[in-house]
Image (cartoon, rainbow, N blue to C red; front, side, top):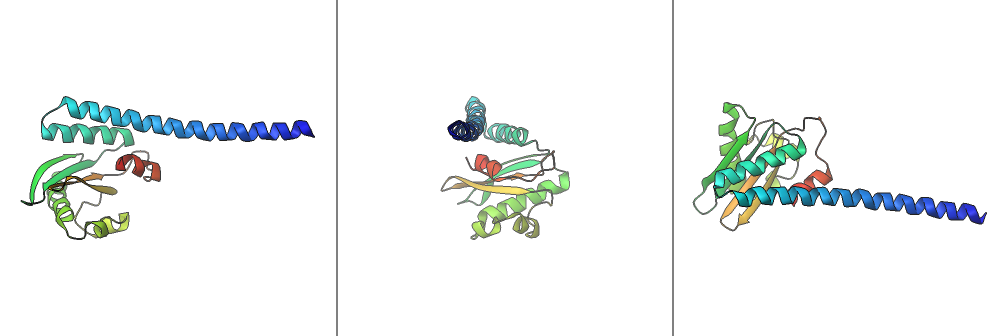
Length: 165
């Protein structure tokens, strides 16, 4: 009877150790990704090059064919940077105008609440599965838009956490 209790404790300990190892592996992946991103960003001084490298690395990490980054100078309401990969020519103008409109809207939070809002707002091409607004400072905002994964899986909370980071 005592032996059975000890075996059960050992099983529980092994399960807990496995969960901890999985979480550590995930965090190490995040850190490696951030390290690679920062290494590429700081190796480049051209703004468009920085955006393109960041977009390519993001798309590679998630296995994507389509993505874009748009940055806007908020006081002048002008596009300060734009990079897109995998889009048709017709979609590129929609990305520029729609992305700018989303970033410059007074209600940015509402326009980006969920995939349904993104699909129905009509400001971005239908290939956009998710979009993440970001601000570099008070005068410059951006949006990172990503298409579907090649493995045909939805974005999960781990993906969103990594993108937020």
